Length: 170
Image 1 (cartoon, rainbow, N blue to C red):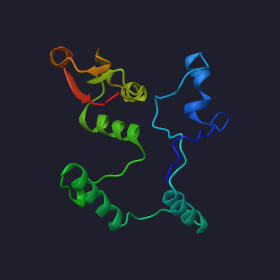
Image 2: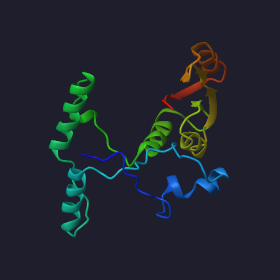
Image 3: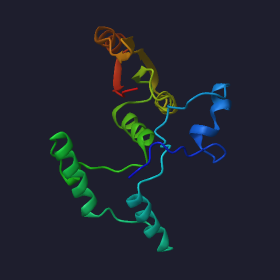
Image 4: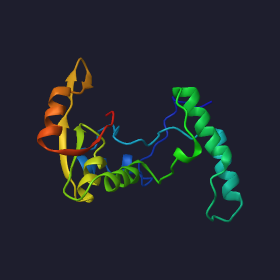
């Protein structure tokens, strides 16, 4: 069982989340909630699996076993009622590289790519890094929640000739 009450200090561990606050935001006493970086110890089964892999002492390339693909298919079905096949599963090194691949696959240099604001800030940078035109559509804050202004979104898509819309829940 994970103990969510135990604090695990992360300062001075080369943590992007914790060790860059002052430099990035020019303030020290902030709670960095901008990145999916856990502040809890990994579950024991995950740690044991990693320890087993490390104990082999050889760190070469691995195949993707059918058991992993079957687990993903089963989870999607149980969790979302969504049926997929093995050929529909693609692996990549992370969310931002996956977004870069989508941008490169579905747009050309100079095309408009739309993201909401606020959103995970590397999304804007990956659009710019791929020489696309960044379009930012603000979300509206209502009753403590961010919501999409669908009329403004439609107008922006038409006026700016948006080719790709990256949807992310902030």
